[in-house]
Every structure is written in structure tokens, then in C-alpha cells.
Length: 204
Image 1 (cartoon, rainbow, N blue to C red):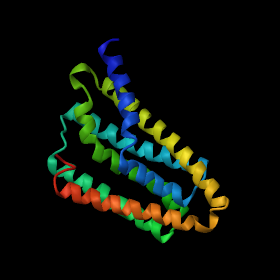
Image 2: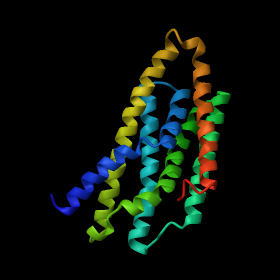
Image 3: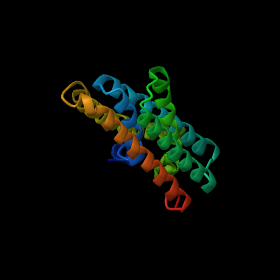
């Protein structure tokens, strides 16, 4: 296997693993918990994945074409925004707020935020020395994003199916408490994310 195919295969595997980051799962789950159905949940995951990919493409191409490098200050700021976003999503779930149109749009921008925060890692991962053109970098990011989005879609489909059965079955009476608990966990994760970022652990 030559260098480029090997790099792309690695990108796919890393994308699958990257999807399981705690902030990714918590954010997407907070959307699913408010509208638990397999089809809607998968739509949330795909919109999130599209937003994540869009920001990775933007940052990756800026790095390739213009030598852009994410500064420590910008990385810290992006991680703080991730933490604040998790808190906001969790609080909205705890309140039981459900604005379908706004939530459908916002999941894309949550993906963008996660992509920006994760772009520092992909800039290190991309083996720039192996690529002679921006098209190769685009291919790498596309395969990486495909791994993330496909994995998140499978996760969302599974979780959406389970939660849908709980909400429409014997657990309907206590489902709001389950959604509230998911929101509480998301808030706690956001607070921990901010604390770890400010301590330097998340940006080391």
C-alpha cells in the first residue's frame, strides 16, 4: 500500500475513533433526547457531521494554502466555547425546551464548533509532507469526516431507536426525568470541560 492510500485508510479509522469523543456524544445525545426517533436522530447526526466537516475543511485548507496554524490562545478559546455550548445544550434539555426549527438549525453550528476545537489535532495528524496538492488534503479530511459522520449516524440511529421505544412504551411517564438526567450530565461535562481547559489540561 502506497503512502497516500495508507494515510486515507488511517484517516477513516481515526475518524471513527474521533466520533466517540465525550463532547461529541453528549451534544448529539442532547438533541436526540428531546426528539427521540431513529429518523430524526440520524438527521441530527448528519447535520452535526456536516458542520464538523465544514470547519475541518476550512481550517485544513487554510493551513495547506496559507500556512495557518492554530495558536494556543485560539485553541483555548475554542475549547471554552465547546464547554459553554455543552452547558447551554444541557440546560435546554433540563428545561424541556423544544423549538424544533431552531434545534434543527443549531445542531449544524454545534458541529462547526466541535470541528474548530478539534482542528488543532487534525492539523497535526494530516501528514502534509506526503501530499503534493490541496486535493490530497481535501481527500484526507473528507475520509476523516466520513468516518466521524457515519459512526455518529449509527450511534444516533441506535440511541434514537431505544429512546423512542422508552418514550412511547412503559417508560413514558418517567421519560422527562431521563431527558433531564441526560441534560444534567451534559451540563456537568461542560463545566468539567471548561475547568480542564482553564487548568491547561485540555490544551496541553
